[in-house]
Length: 409
Ligand code: GLA
Image (tube, rainbow, N blue to C red; front, top):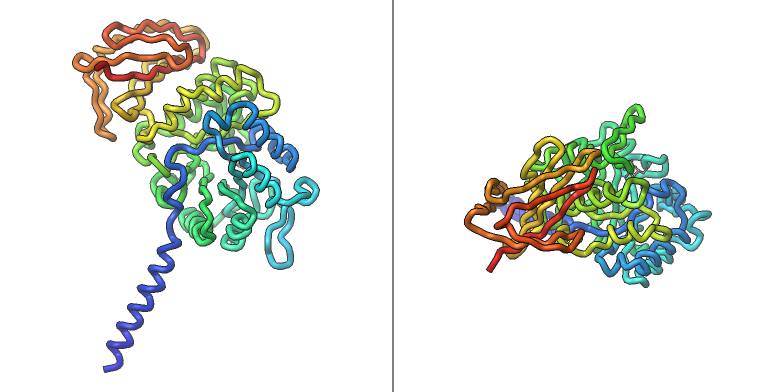
């Protein structure tokens, strides 16, 4: 007679235990309901990071108007680390971060901003500093005590590690701290994270590292870095968009706006990242950026496409030679349209709206332009028109025209 009772007890106990565990075992559901916006140190500074530069960058994010435009996170990438102490607790590099990470987080918070940090699922980070393998819960706890709001978690030195297991472990470790920490997965799309990470991270990289060029690949031997068009083409935009939405974004990597491309290329890069619902993480030096760069990064109408509450990534609508057209469903039956000239010469194109029916089968949206009419606003130039008349475009080399369409009453 005792046996069944014991069995029932065991069941009850495990149910209690499991539900306790389950309470922790989810990513924070309140974060990244729209794509994260911020700045990251890697693209400009690589390992040359220190606390003064990070503080200055927080100041510049406010002074430049980027905070007002919606940018929120100041993210320190690789190379902030010192050694682990005798208890295994990770230390900052005391030469470059002498005041410690807590003081730096307090400073960034005092500006009304949030702070992000970087670690790696392996034994070492990509730059060779201590990774979090075997220290996941301890590191998450340390980050929470420092006041960290965002973790980018990389994938170097991970031979024989299961990516789903490794990223789930860190997700659970972050959840256990009780602090809302946005979890950004960075395994370059190698293991198709869009298929398994929607409940694990708030965003996942879909490519190797970006580099500031239009359509190049820099081959470094065992890996490559990629230009803007290469990242755009790398994954089939139509296929990946189905996995993304509020709290789960395809990350096309930190931006290279202001890092050496032409103004047209920067404008296209920014507009494409916005339309694709990629996180908008600037990667330039905010303290010294030109007015042109600042205007691109703070274009509120383009940002509004990215931050739209529906959270639907743009679809590829037309691809004909050097012309690509992307369409993005927005709230209130509005649409974003992006016309991209991939080529190095200007492109003349007349778009007859009535000629192309728009069908988004993945998100069940459809426009028959012969029946529904829209007005449009050009989000870079400010001029207006409607879809009754064909749209005559002259798109300069490597440039874009981006429109917001509003249904006519
Ligand atoms: C990898 C990541 C980059 C950057 C570096 C840091 O290459 O993909 O974004 O974080 O590591 O070492």
